[in-house]
Length: 354
Image (cartoon, rainbow, N blue to C red; front, side, top):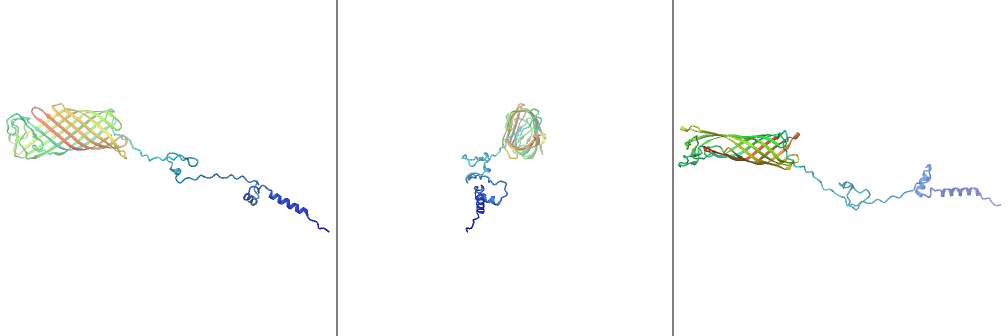
């Protein structure tokens, strides 16, 4: 008797295996199918499509990093054929501004001239007593070698100006000193109130000279820019000079004293120009003045050339120091006398604008 084969279990096994192998989870790939098998509780059995990644561009070692683009930002996508722009370092240079007083401000300064003083006096101017020669010759007595006044001395000066208009100012200055000397004259001295005067030769003398040089006038800024200024000025000049001479045995001549004043005019020009500004705000500039003296039988000049260093202060104020060379030459000539005085040398000055 033939044995009966159980077909029903075989058919069920074939259907079960077909269902497993034909499932869509195996079509996605072995990796995804494994994940699905390991995680059977996922809501969907369909795996998301995998998008292939774009190949990244490799940056050349010669290309600058993004931080190196100082002026132009780096290109948004990859490396461009245009070379990146690199900027040279830029250094800010401050403009050179010349400090100058404004309307309603004062400028005051003090100056000291380390001067070489010279000159002569003829009193009387014409005399028959001149080295023993008879004739109408001019008498000249040297202030240094004859009157024994010191050659080198420090002469102080004070100056104040007020700017009552943007380009107009009124200014006053005074230069003064008193010199005392003495010793043995080198020559025969004729110094007296008349033709015979007084003669000191071969004896000790004492001499004193008092001199004051005043100036007051107007200053007009003809050209005024941020870094330069050209001004013209007109002053009234007044000087007082007094010379006293004494000796041990003056005899009938006593101790004569010569005193005279000068009232003259002066016209001149001033020039200032800024040429350098320091990192701290200080300003270095040229500062030059020149004027001619005339009228009242007087001729002369006052010339000053130097450099100024200004330091800015708050609220539009500033201070400065100045140094250079100055020459003051005065000569007055009348029938009865002649007087000449020269001051020349370096100077230092300090002032404020407020």
